[in-house]
Amino acid sequence: MINSQPAPTNLNKTRIEWVDFSKGVCIILVVLMHSTLGVEKALGEVSFLHGFIEWARPFRMPDFFLIAGLFLSRRIGHTWRSYLDTKVVHFFYFYFIWMTIWYVLKLPEFITSKGPVDAMLLYPISFVQPLGTLWFIYLLPVFFVFTKLTRNVPVIAIWLFAAVLHASQLETGARVIDEFGARFIFFYSGYAFAPFAFRVAEFFNQQKLASLINGLLIWAVLNAWLVTGGYAKTAGIELAMGYVGTGAVFAIGVLLSRVKFGEAVAYCGRNSIVIFLSYFVFMAAARMIIIKTGIDIGPGLLSLIVTATAIIGPLILSHLIKATPLTYLYRRHKFFYLPQETEPQKMRAKTLVKKISVDERQKPRFNTGNEHHPMA
Image (tube, rainbow, N blue to C red; front, top):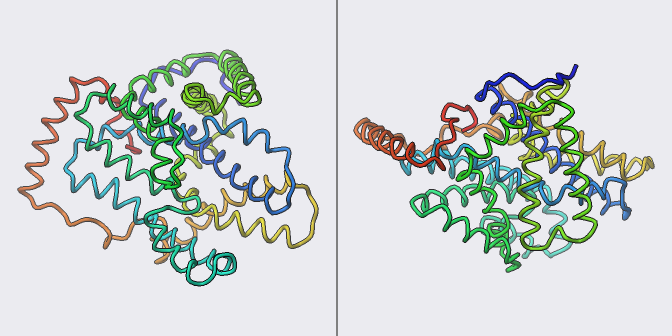
């Protein structure tokens, strides 16, 4: 059943819903891209999904990073110990575990293609130059730290700095630098302009079904025209397409929240970290097994099967290992938390946070209105 009428005005509920649905759309698009490109490379054929993959390129990663910054205002005022624990150690814990798994699985291939010495060196290098699909997890702590360090710098100054980096389209060969230049502006925009993002989502929430669909269709056609016309990688246009496309993903999130079967997308959104960390294992396994069977189903259908496996596999695995020591593949072990603050330190921290909260309320750019959101 689809509710064609505007949803009731309940901003907190709406925000939770559209964030979950939008994150679900993001992770599905990311897995679909890697699955499709991997199948096309393995078969040496282009699938019918290739055009869609290119169509989604302008907004696929921008929306992921912008959403990642939306609720940062709740944490950024915390003490450095607390902030580093939740925003740096947390992500590097998972990066370390899954980068190690990725490296071990790829080691035979590395030895064959690079030789034993270079293959062994790749592992320590991966902690400076992130490899594979886990660079997103690596880059988030960099964004978190940089944003906290510059939180007292005027927003316009940081935004202009980020815009210049984005327009420069850096290609230094250092992935952290290049991806920082390409992605930071979206993460920072999510943090600095969160109130505007929430108002946009609320606006979409108040629209009728027909209006939402018509608006999305117009955007889809315009986005396709810019991509096929070769404009999508032009400085300025690329940035605008990232912002507009992210807004469209918000609208899709609102739309899916009115559809019963859309709950599956929201579930993926709530568990996006689980999928992102381990989809590559299931993706590679499914692709290899199906291709080795010799069954010819075409690259497009094969890509869809591989995508479904890569999304569902991590969700099933995380459920199966919950009561086992392997649960720490997806949940940080207690030994990997920073030392707890003493009571006097906690009291000083609370006083500081209260003071910061008062200051932040005087800065609308930091007040998201979502301080109690569970994803913050």
